[in-house]
Image (cartoon, rainbow, N blue to C red):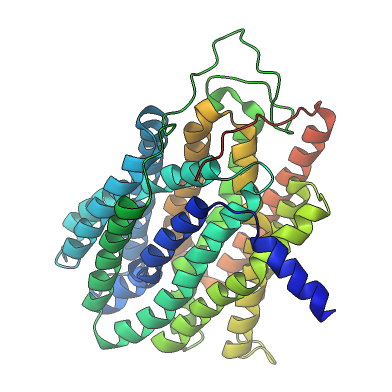
Length: 429
């Protein structure tokens, strides 16, 4: 049993190119300083003394900036390549984040948050395109999982350290977050060579035929916006992500106000989420890929677990449901949900695209996430204001179940369509 487990973990990490590992290292540096986002709602309400509604508006503006940034990032990646888009985003976003701590007026803060997220989130589709570029078809999901491992290891460090720094001085969060962004940009520019094939392949013309397509039954088109099935996939993903992203906005506030947890305890739970992913996700993804379980089925299972995790929060305060036990159970359930859903959402998106449209496909998927990031805090803060936390969590669970139903339908449609082989993609580095 022990030897089988060791072999599983060794196989899970084999076959990834050095550039994939370097991109993961850049992400690790960046995410070790990710402290502003998980504590932004607390910063706005506890430090700047904004109302929950105004804090929700600012978090919604954060999402709008992310939406616009991911759209521009996808366009710029397909036009200019992923290398410089990543570099400029990290450096400019880091500098702007350092300045954000000095903005305290509501409307100015809304504008500043929009600009910061616009600059920072152009990185997202460019980075995903870079991972897809350096990973072969057989290692692509694991390459995305390695990137997520770096994100979550950094999240564990940043969340734990951020809780301690927030208890000392909230301004420290901005200094550490901004400087690590700049450091990640310097490492990327210094050690990741600009690939000669960074520019995407020529786009297929109307009527051209590419014989090898992803195993999604998709016919080549110039734009993901014409791919109706993929648009449905993005809608289902956005519904799930709208629920999942409560973890970064209203859940910390719920832990603080309703469960009476301290900032340090909240940071520890956020760190637990990242540590579990670091310890389990790569081996889990590898094992599931070896069993060739259909991606929509895995995603749907993860979404259902997400619904259960948020339904659990509505039980807080009932006999037998202490604050610590509810928080711990929620974190474990939502973490398993995340591990089953998000890596396979990303790899499916890459498989659905051609190399020429990969940036736009990844951008459309990321725009769904940005839309969720926009609506999640705005809708959530209004619901909490008018119906309270318990009813809000049940509504979130219902939305997640709606998303799971959509993924079930989506998987059924994929089985109906004829499958084709994936496009061979040049792997370098």
